[in-house]
Amino acid sequence: MQSNAAFKRAATGPGIKLSRLPVAEPRSDEALMAAIATGDQVAFARLVERHLSRTVGLATRLMGSRADGEEIAQEAFARVWSHAARWRPLGGGGNARFTTWLYRIVMNLAIDRKRRPTHAAMDDVDEPVDEADDGFVQIHRREVSDAVTEAMMQLPERQRVALALCFFEGMSNIEAGKIMSLSVGAVESLLVRARRSLRQGLAGVYEELSEG
Amino acid sequence: MNLNRLSAILEAYGADPERWPVEEREPALALTRSSLPAARALTEARMLDSMLLEQSFPDIADEPEQFTMLHSAIVSAARRRVVSTRFGRWFGFDLTPGQLWPSVAGLALASVLGFAVGLGGFLQSTEGDHDIDEIAVLSPIDLPAIGQ
Image (tube, rainbow over the protein chains, first blue to last red):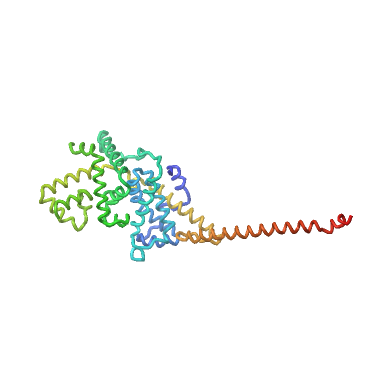
């Protein structure tokens, strides 16, 4: 696991700072990927800037931890950089949009990582503090959030991925199917099983909410 | 659209119509307005949704410092690869993104050839040392000693 200190060391290196990126017309992901394939670091910096937040978000959902999610995102973008020349855009001999390819990389990395023994604690997730809430509400929300995370982590990998893509990332079943290399029907079936398992796993919290 | 299909949709995608398959959205919504069991099923699905949406992770986009740090780490790592690429080019290898495999294959071939040439040279030099030993034995310097 890469610590914050490691990030700081890397960040102080001779990389391209966000503020130094030249202002230009927004280029499509496909155009940026074509430039990255020739070794264009500015194009790479732009692509990372555009997709970093969502990539970390998806990886965090799949891993159950922000720290792990950030690591997965780093690895995923390293692969984007290394394999840019191999990627073919939709309609240009390829069969996937850039984001489909990126999220597939994230999914595969997360599944690989989950299969390895872990030593990361789920408690390392920092919850945002909502000052509008009182302490009791915050504690309750934290408990529900932790219970959901735990239940999500108990799901079989493909069910968790399907739920993360469709429910949390708001992708259509068609997009999720492309990322997971599954039919729409198979994605729907995974979602049904995932939600049923979650309902059972969260029965206690569920009853509490029903009564409240 | 019937209650069974609506239940399947709710089971899979939850209560938010935005998540439902586009082509089934309107008929499904119409059913929830016209049928009491359908409306109940929708309420039930909302309950699970609200619980799942309680799962919150801080969005890195809301943390500019952390975002910049992670962004810089990723771009710096790519830059380090470029530096090693240039280093590689001095030795005749092209390590630009997507060209790594040919370069690795070239490096492996060069290593094998280097090993073969080195081994051949070593064997040759061993044979040469043997000849030198023989010559040394028959060296004219030693001949008088033989004669004695």
